[in-house]
Length: 99
Image 1 (spheres, rainbow, N blue to C red):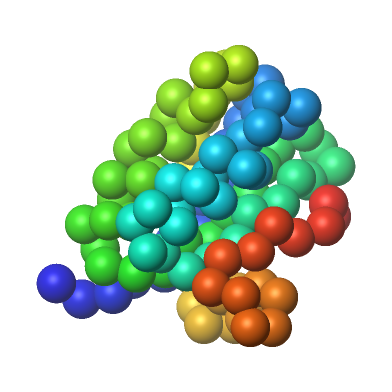
Image 2 (image 1 turned 60 degrees about the vertical axis):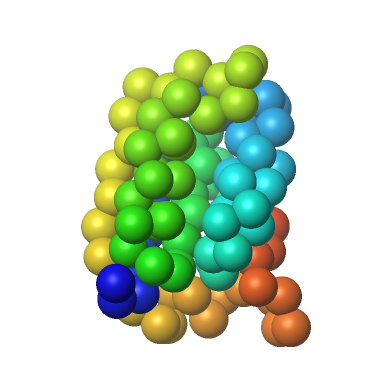
C-alpha cells in the first residue's frame, strides 16, 4: 500500500490532557513520521506520514485521544512533503512549539 501524508486538526478539550504526547506515542508505535503541536486557538494539529492503512488507523483513534481528552472533531486533509519537513532535523516524529 502506498505512503500518504495527512494533516489533521483536532478540536475539543485537547490541550493540557497529554494529547500531543499521546499522538507521538501512537505514531511511533506505528512507525509513522510527522509532528504534532498545539495551536493558540485551543486545537492540536498534526501531520502523519506512512502507509495509508496505518495513517488511517491513527486518525480513527484520534477521534478519542487519551483518557482525559474530549474530542469534538478531527478535520483531515492531504498534505505535502513541505508540511512534513517542519519536523525537527533528525527526528522521525517531533513535538513542535505552539503556533
